[in-house]
Image (cartoon, rainbow, N blue to C red; front, side, top):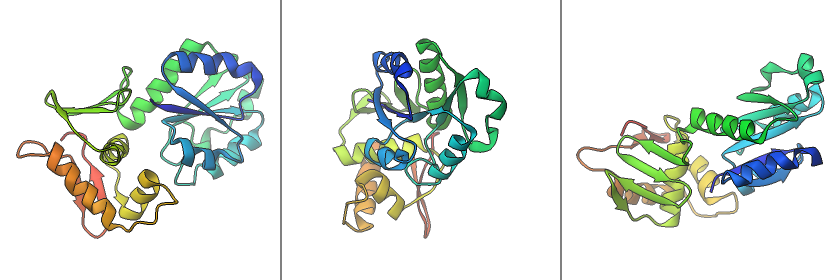
Amino acid sequence: MNSILLIDATEELRPLAAALEEAGFAVAHATLDGAAEAARETRPAATLVALAARADSIALRNARASDALKDVPAIALIRAELLPAFDVQAGFDDFLVYPALGEEAVARVRRAIWARSGVESDNTLRAGDLLLDLANYKVSLTGRPVDLTYKEYELLRFLAMNREKVFTREALLNRVWGYDFYGGARTVDVHIRRLRSKIEDAHHTFIETVRNVGYRFHAGG
């Protein structure tokens, strides 16, 4: 299930959170100061940020410099009277003027996730003949189920949701295994090799090795 991180949300945004949960998202909450740490724990597919002042957007821009948030789409929630002071350079993917309809928020979230990662409205991610069912943790290739371990699935999901971006082995260890994992970079190589053996063949190549750097996922397969 995709997780959505609500940052600095107030009580009046509870209906919006309920609408996201009804649409199948898991909703987590965090303060602006604790956003990066919360993102490391929940690994959200998107963030919704309630802005109370211009300074909030500046603080969020600083928070998004962290590895946990820099690749996560962010949608600003802002009151109409604050729009003139809205910092369009803060790096938001979209914004909502609230109080907003829950249906609109769900649609904006899905659109932002799709734009960044290719995840579609039915919570699936397609890359050529490869299909990831993110709601049920299932993968198939040309309609055939692919049996992956949990870490293989998480590695594939992360790479596929950040298509065409190169990640070092150290970055993949941090993002997939977590900051408290003490294994070496060889762990990533072993899992990449096993993953390739299960999803690649003469007609399908999804993961590219970038020499002396790391790995990249090709959406076209």
